[in-house]
Structures are given as C-alpha cells and as structure tokens.
Image 1 (cartoon, rainbow, N blue to C red):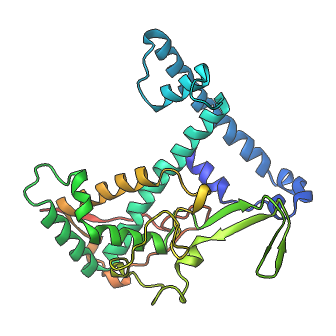
Image 2 (image 1 turned 60 degrees about the vertical axis):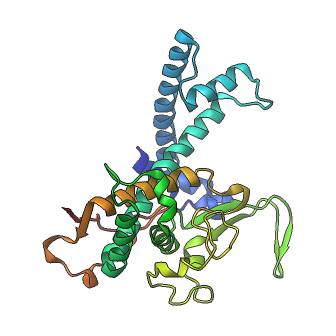
Image 3 (image 1 turned 135 degrees about the horizontal axis):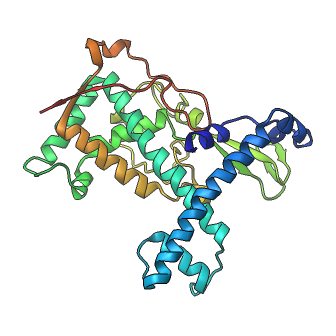
Length: 293
C-alpha cells in the first residue's frame, strides 16, 4: 500500500499542468487509483485510532504520541484546534517521511560507499576507532564524534535527495528575476539539480564526502546549495528523527561488518542508477555480502 502511494505521488497528472483537463486523469484511471489508495490508507489509520481510543478509555493514560494527539482532539487544552483529519495527516506524514526516508538514506549511502571502497574504509576506520571498547555496538552519543560518517551521508543525499522535486504553491502575485508569477501557481523546486550544480560543487557528479568536512552545512536548508529535505517552514519536520536513526543504523553496520559486492563483482563496474518516480530508489535492489569481523 505504501509502495502504491509512493508511485502515485510520483505519477504525472495532466491536471497538475492543465487544470481544465481534469477529465483526462479520470479517463486514464488515475483518479480511481488515488481514491482507492486513499480509502485503504484511511481504513488502516482509522482502525489504529479506534484501538488507541479504546485503550485510553480503559486506563486514561497517554502511552505514546498518538494518544497525545487524540487527547488534544478530545480536550482541546493546548491553545490550538486539532481534529481527527489533522491527526490522520500527521500519521501519514510519519509513515512516508519516517520510514521511506530512513531506509533510502541508508541505501544510497551504502551504495555509494560500496562503489567507492576507499571512502568505505575511511568511514569504517573512524566508526571502529570511536566505538572501540563499546559492548554491543555504536551508541547514540558516540555519533557526534563521527564526522566522516556524517559527511558520507550528506554527500549521498546531495547526489540522491529522498524527494528530488518539492512541490510548492505561490500564495500571492510575485515577480522573480523578471518573471511574473501569479498567486496559486504550482512551483517545483528541483533539489536533484541543485545538488549537482557544477557552479556550486566541484566535480558535482562525484562522490566526495570530504567536501562536507570543511563546510558548515546542515540539513535545515539555510544554505540553498544543499536542500535534500527542503527548506523553510515547508521543510521536512522529521529531519532530526530520521537522520539520527539512519546514522545510528549505518554506524552499526560499519562497526560490525565488512561489506562487499557478491560474486567478486568489481566496484568500478557497479552502477548506482536511480529509478523513476516521486521518491526514486535504486533501479536494481542493492545486494551486498556482510562479512562479520
């Protein structure tokens, strides 16, 4: 179901460009796919909400985030209004941004590191040095000392932003660089192209994590050259959660295993190719051999 949702988000709708041709989306079956997927998602989320409401009715306790949101809907004591639809939208955002983004950040970083074994060795050496003597693996507090790991993930996300195109809409008539942009105009920010702009990045198509070692760039979007998660008020609200989990997972993968391509495949012949869609993944599944230390 989430795969279908991701594919739909990446499907070009004629009505997005020509609103008066909405009937084309109906004729091609796109409207029906959207309605069917929306109904399935709503059913799953509604069932979850009902279960949490029943649990809270029994003991009156707030056990998790969803309980807290439902409490706000019921009591309205937080100084702002929230209804059931708002809660469903937040849960859906967490599903899309909190799961898809995490695994893609890990997958793209691993793919680029495997293709560049020298960079892999550098990251592994750093991780194992910082976490030396730690029982069970890398701890969250040790991540702050792993600058190469952070740089490698930033570089992977520069080349492969989780969402290449950010949809926006102008809220008022605007004039930008000589162009008149009416209110309600749909605008797409191309994060993929920005991340590969040769005027901003030397050897822009090359995987070079060291470029982030001396640049004070974070994921907030304050530097317009690096916006893998958007920027401003419309930026991804779950950046901190997603990256912390992705970095911790990647660090433990580097700590416990050596990673190689199967069947003696040469890293230089390994192609890192993106699929099509709203949130592209690797065109071919990433298959690696993990060798325990």
